[in-house]
Length: 365
Image 1 (spheres, one colour):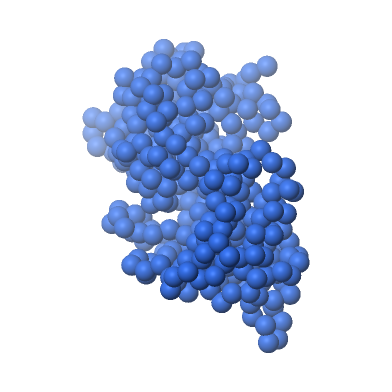
Image 2 (tube, rainbow, N blue to C red):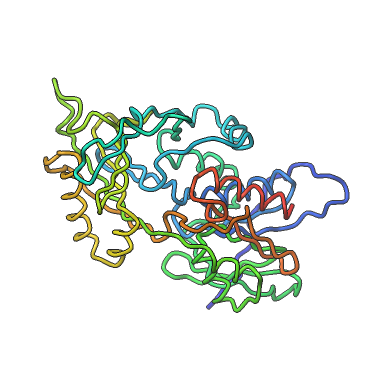
């Protein structure tokens, strides 16, 4: 039986301009775009409740722990081009650190260096101690105020039973427990385009957002994570190549990074390997054990590391890299009070997600 969840206690809101009504926004998704959107709305004096199906905020900046150290399972690094992104980074001093990566190499299909390295036109940045740390830091005030609800999947958007001009959300919590969260003036979807479009369809909502979302295309990615603690002994600092990051033309592998080379990380040698979009799509529904074995073989071919890893794990991302972006920073249906944001609006970079979430918040605030 569905239950209506009491509205969480809200921390004191910042002062807002006289005459501006305080509204309550629901944000679905706690990745970079969702958290940036939410915190911007809070700073503007509004109430916000963020719903996240995972255990914590972060989205594709996810950091996965292992007995040998952490892995950046999604976004590997980010660049900073927009002054607004640089200013936001400065609000959390010490979290973002520059990663030299020995310059990113370019490899041919056999793993040979095919070019001297990508031009170092801009710095490669990582969050520390893991890529998830930046979004987590920005999400912490929301979590402390009870405005970030995790382990909760939004299944339907409906007209509020007590206010025909507002919205309520049906959700599933741990174990599939159903709840209804009511009292929202607008619902903002900070999800990949396909799940956002599906949620609108499942909710039987007629909005221009649906058609726009259908023009976005995103490629999947299988990620492999490997640890080699045997490399940490006298006279041996690394296994295999002396570079720390590379783009590869191998048919299975598109990217490799030595996690232990990133600032603030454990020294035990660890590698994150991301499969090519085409191979990931072809093997999207394959058994994870089979995928892992194939990627380990490809990793050995590319790096020359044939040692048995002490730890191996995979992660499948169904919506990893935008191949056809929306072409504008966000979607906002003011008549219905529905919006959407994400890196897919502008591209696939982490900064694109930041700008999309920020622009949507500014548009609705």
